Amino acid sequence: MRFSGIIAFLFFFSLISFAQQTVIRGTAPGAERKIIRITTPGDLITFWERPLTSSRVDSTGHFTLTVNLVETINVIITIDFHKTEMFLEPGKTYNIRIAPMNYDEFTEVNPFIQSQNLLLEEDNKDPGELNSLIVAFNSIYSGFLMENFNALYRDRNRTLLDSFRVQIDRQFGQVKNTYFLDYAFYQIASLEQLTQYLPKLQLAAKYFTGKPILYYNVEYMDFFNSFFTKYLTVTSNTIRKLDFTTLLKGPDPYRAMLKAMTVDTILRNEQLRELVMLKGLMELYHTPPFDQEQIISVIRASKEGTRYPENRIVAEDMISLLTKLKPGTPAPEFTLLGRDQKDLSLNSLRGKPVVLWFWTTYCEGCLSEMDLIRPLFDKYRENIHFVSVSADKFFGKMLYFINLKKDYVWTFVNIGDQSEVLKDYDVRTYPLFVLIDKEGKIYKYPAGQPSSGLEADIQKILQQ
Image (cartoon, rainbow, N blue to C red; front, top):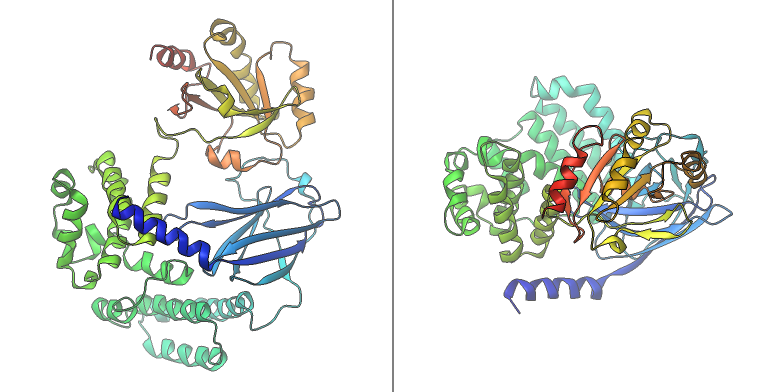
């Protein structure tokens, strides 16, 4: 077993060994029989969401969710496209109430359009509980910042900041919750950065040097992201002078970059230096003239070579984020209900390419494009699968519509309550066409539409 593999195994074993069961019980009137999900950012640099658990709300509006946690984390609770957030601590039980909502009155099915947020309350809320503490702190912090922003940012009024620190100490000085104390500590660090309370080197010495990296504390990572934004190319007086183009093209660029970055005294700690390097690589990925494949290669090398399991998670999430839906990557799997009321999985279609597209009955452009599908289906049906994914909320609405269309003879499936499929395929507009090869990998995203290049794309994939 490779050394990095041993580290990953030990880290995974430690998670299993020390995880504690956290339980969330609650009610969600109006969401009866809908799926409620909990996800969390796998890391707080990429914010790549990872599923934690899900359950179906019962016929009385009650639900129970359980998840095993090692760390206190911020989670996202979702019903359909409606969201709320809270913090979960290992081993605790939460009793929550989600405000009543008529979920079916929201007809627009798009996860990237702002939906009404879920309103959440905890039963028997303890003012010393983490979520209560953070709400109280954020209220004071937001009021202070709104009232004094110009004095802090423009006038660099450090006295105001000192007074605010005294106010926070007076109100929260007896709190023992470690996550909260770190949360407040690094929110104040952000204010010190805003006011230039300390020179950059002193700010780094106070908040980074000799301190652990708090990967799962949202305010630590918010400060980290702000402090190290464009650090490789702009804000570090020493690192920005390095020729990263040459380093990326040279032998073992991962090790070469790590070594070259030691010129910055803030980054003497290897774990911090590697994390800053990863953040910088993600920024370089979108910066011409850097070669994206070279950058992905270095991030992969970091994932394999790092001695720090948390950095490995960050690298893994970066690869997922930066390569999502790129040619050659696995097409996101799904199992959806078909027009014959039987489940159809994308995996079951392997062996032939798939033309996949997302549409809704209320999208006029979708219907115009689908009217052009029949001749393509008749011509290529023996060599390729044609699959229409209806994003209408109700299966019956899709079925009624397609039964009126005698030319719609290919495969139809419906999203139903599996809204995560739209996120997986980054569906922001309808129709969206995707071409998947016979091995289940993305061939072209987005593919041409029937009116503008889809047949040419089909011919290319069949010539492979």
